[in-house]
Amino acid sequence: MEWQPLDFERPIFELERRLQDLKNHSDKHDVDLDSAIKELETTLRETRRQIYGNLTAWQRVQIARHVQRPFALDYIERCFTNWVELHGDRRFADDRAMPCGVATLGTERCVVITHQKGRNTKENVLRNFGCAHPEGYRKALRLMRLGEKFGMPVISLIDTPGAFPGVGSEERHISEAIAVNLREMMRLGVPIVAAVIGEGGSGGALGIGVADHVLILENAYYSVISPEACSAILWRDRRHAAEAAEALKLTAPDLLKLEVVDEIVPEPAGGAHRDYDSVAANLGKALRRALQQVCQVPITDLLGKRYQKFRQLGVFAGGKSVSASAGS
Image (spheres, one colour):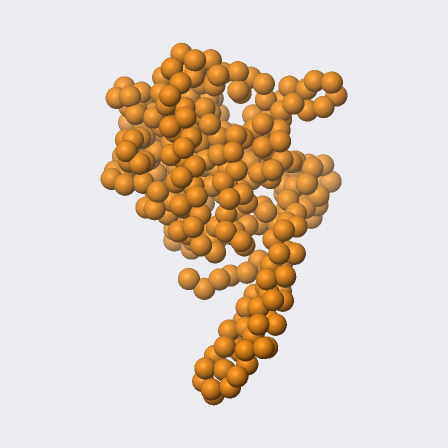
């Protein structure tokens, strides 16, 4: 897959192109260009270090939205085995924006709930740009209850800009569907592990995000509102999205500090879209470790900890934030 650089990555892209041209010229014409190649490689490493070591919140949002970033089904293919997708909410329809099913993580059979985006127009129409309808959340709840019935833990992979805000979605009560999920996940009698793998937008993300252990990929974000929408509200202009992203404290390090998430999963330099297998290995390892930890806790204790975990979000003490809401 050809790399499609973001604006701030163009210096790296140009250096990589020049380096490849030098190597090709050296091979084709049998010319010794080792010194020039080594010098350019040093420059490339330093440029990568400077850019990726000092990413702003807005740049991380751009990486989280990258069209080449691995989506939920890419992780299912690499982290899980024996995946069987289950369809329909038994009320209205099957929401293709939320593929759900059962799969094996390590040796544990799990219910897997996801959001799925598309990489081109056809896929995005099919997946509704990762924005689920009410039937998606009701399908997810149906499968979570199935998991509870058979003692299977729940794994949630979150990647959505938000629940679909269209007329049909409102007619079928999207707010009620998400609210019911929040209530039922809070008292679901099996362990739940969630991972924000890209965008974690508002209630659309939290509707499958109530979990005992919440992971987030290094360049993913989790926020009550998008930077553009926040900018439009506060500044009456969407051009202040970068400032809004900083103010929202939506990046993984900020969320970990605020105790909204429990663990950051590292990505390869440049983002998950640069190396699918590497980031999938990191996520799979983190999911297995987290699942093993929560499965060792008696379910009554787990439910109590889950309740307290989310009740404390947004609590302030001594003038300093103890935790902050990420999608209430």
